[in-house]
Image (cartoon, rainbow, N blue to C red):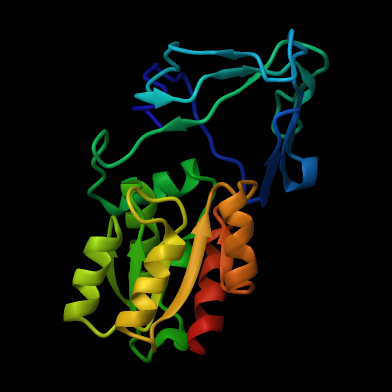
Amino acid sequence: MGRFYPVQWNSFTVAKDAAMEWKFTKDRAEARLDGGKTAEVVLNRNPGMTDDPVVIKNLKYWGAPRNDGFVLMPNEIEAYRAGDKPFEFKGTNGFMITFDMNSKDVQYTSRTCAERCFKFCKILPRKSDFAPTQKATAVKAILVVDDDFAMRRGIALMLKGQGYEVFEAEDGMQALQVLGQKSIDLAIVDLFLPGQDGIEIAEGIGKKNPSTKILLVTAYGEYGRAKEAQQIFQKNYLEKSFLARVLSKKVEEILGT
């Protein structure tokens, strides 16, 4: 968080765990925390001269090294309803932005940093999510494939804490190298990866080791390829707005642990 918002905080607290949901199209974006009880943002596209969104390019956003542009979207509502300083605005200026930070920009090496990454990525684990469970006593091997270092390492640390043997790969080539050396029970694969995407990587894993189960995850559930992935993987598919305990339960369900 300090790298993304390089400012001096007078105070900083984190609210209790709550499910986050978001969805967006070119005309509208919605994000809610705890169904809107804790926080809510609804944006509508700024009317331009054509039907395309109005986008400001080549403008830096805080500490993010890359972004895809500021899509001008005045807010229908922007509200935070928890704590001692709640607020609510309607009809003010707003924008939607997708930014990118990966392992080439930031290297997280400690469990504490990974826990912060979980919170930043809206996975929000509890301390109990890092505790071993009786269900995970039979050691199973899991491969986490994701080019986002913070996300990959955070998931790996959580699963290791629950008693699984965990390996990591940042792309399809590394994933196949691990599979050539280790017997993997489950591969958790991000959909949007450089080179081969998650569907293609899953197909490669299936050919190399048909017994390896696949769980596909993505942060971009609205895109066409994600819709295709949902149809292919059905129950073995999660969007990255999941809570840590949801991922843990899904892993147990797939592995039968």
